[in-house]
Every structure is written in structure tokens, then in C-alpha cells.
Length: 103
Image (tube, rainbow, N blue to C red; front, top):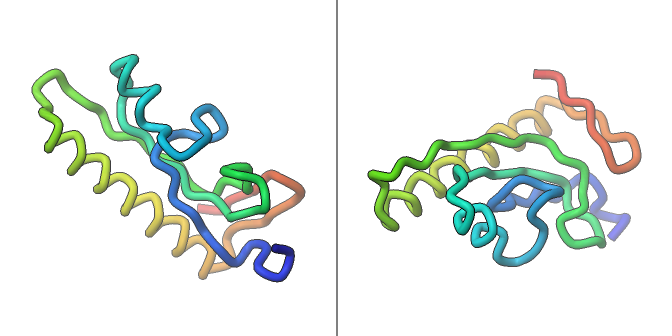
């Protein structure tokens, strides 16, 4: 994995490191929280890479499942696009498992 260190970006469907794993949206939604997304560098450890960007979209009681899904996909695309832009502009410094991001 070292060959690709800090070269692969993953989008995670919740906030890391709080909700790690393959189905992280269940825990926040079960507690009626907003939809969150994290973009991070991939490492050998699941969802443990240095975080590049995070954001949240507020979920209303008026949102149905389709609306929540659409809004969740929108925030994930936005966070991933931001992370890619920051990476390409070399505005992310990684030290250990942490990052310093210059917006």
C-alpha cells in the first residue's frame, strides 16, 4: 500500500473517525442526525486514513427517503470534489495520520 500512499482518495458516507465501516449511515440516521461525508486518503487500515475534507447537510422531518438519498449523494460529491481540488493544488500536508489543509 505504501506505493499508493496519499494518492488514493476515498469518500466515506459519514464523519470519520466516529462512524467507521461499510454501512456508516445507519448509526447517524437511526439517531436522526444530519447526513455527513468525509474524504480521506486510503490506507491499509479501514477508514483510518488522513482526513482531507468533511461537510454536513441538514436533514428535515420533511425529507423522505428519496430526498435524503439525493441530498446525501450531493454532499458526498461536493466533499469528494473539494478533496480532489485541494490534493491537486497541493494544499494538503500529511504528517502521520493527520493533515493540515490550506483552504
